[in-house]
Amino acid sequence: MNFDDTPQEAAFRAEARAWIAANAPKQYEEELRKSSLGGTVLKNVNILEVAKAWQKKKADAGWACLHWPKEYGGRGSSSIECVIWQQEEGPFGKLSGMFFIGHGMCGPTIMAFAGEAEKKKYLPPLASGEKVWCQLFSEPAGGSDIAGLRTRAEKRGDNWIINGQKIWTSGAHYSDYGILLTRTDPAVAKHKGLTMFFLDMKSPGVEIRPIKQASGASDFNEVYFADVTIPDSQRLGAVNDGWNVSLTTLMNERMSIGAGVSTGFPELFDFCNSLMLEDGPAIQDRSVRSRLANYAVKASGLKYTSMRAISALSNGERPGPENSIGKLVLGAMLQDIASYAMDLEGAAGALTSADEEIVNGQFQQMLLTSPSMRIAGGTDEILRNIIAERVLGLPGDIRVDKDVPFNKIPTKGR
Image 1 (tube, helix red, strand yellow):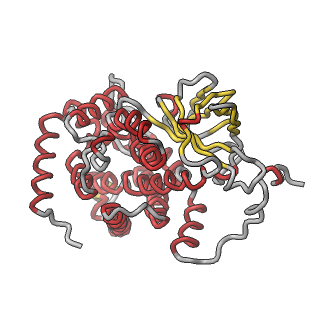
Image 2 (tube, one colour; image 1 turned 180 degrees about the vertical axis):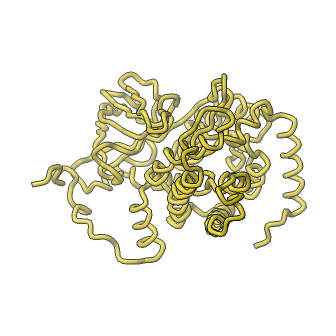
Image 3 (cartoon, one colour; image 1 turned 180 degrees about the horizontal axis):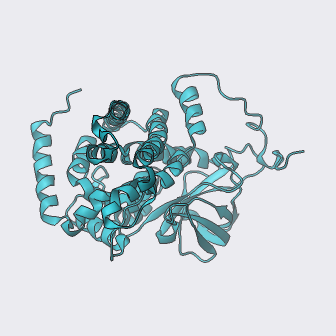
């Protein structure tokens, strides 16, 4: 594969670079460069407001959600042009984190299953950042088994009444809309009785409770539904076909996580170039160089695996189960890099907050946050099963409840 720009791509890159140079919020550039997986933080400003302003400016100039059709708020660009934009946007791309779920997961699902009127109403403000979306899938009793969900949707006239609970919903506390997977028929096998909807997160009966994390942040939430009304026009796909609809969301989710999250390797490499150990610079230590080489190989593998997925998308193909590979490798790599950086730092790894210790605090936050990457979008175990069964063609796990009606599945051990 030739990664050099074609003349057309070079012209696109030059246009993008010039626009970013003239319009990016450069007053935040240094802070954004120092931000990592531990969390993008800007001092003395509301980062959501900054992110929305930058996204709206991009949308007004035709630089938002580049690969989306123009009528839905995009630019109609090729997948390669999207990659070029991400490269040129650099640290300012971290402001897009607020819209990661909406743009990477909810948007493609709406585009695939909503009616044309709904697409034209909801997608442009999603692309422009004026409206933020979240994904309401996981539940306390389901664990990694999304098909084990218990949130109920009951049809009443032209509406559906929702009761139940979701958990680990990222960004629910600042989201305007969400896509919601519910159970509409408990008398059939668990994968067959699900239906997908989208809803206004300010609807009566929706209660959001932030979850305090070990890192001190509250990015995740519990969401409760008590007789929430959703019109049938906001149903995505056919009744009881929600599992097939959710596969579009899940495949895009795993591809987005695998391709869109930093590995932490650039930060570690820069850190090792400046860190002094007892016997000299860390970068001159043979064991450190060996670990860095190992991480460099993995980071390169993730990059080109992502490029393979992008090439498939440019040919009009749907994201497939092979995209679970990138997410699986990324989650473990982030945790390993953060742990190794903390080992190198020693006691200094416990420091945070002070400006001169920004790098130390960065790895501490990365370590505290990294376990979530091995759970979000499917646990390591789930992803290994997907890769084994759907990519390698190995025999599937024995699933004793596969064809059992959901309401007949025991909920308690004997």
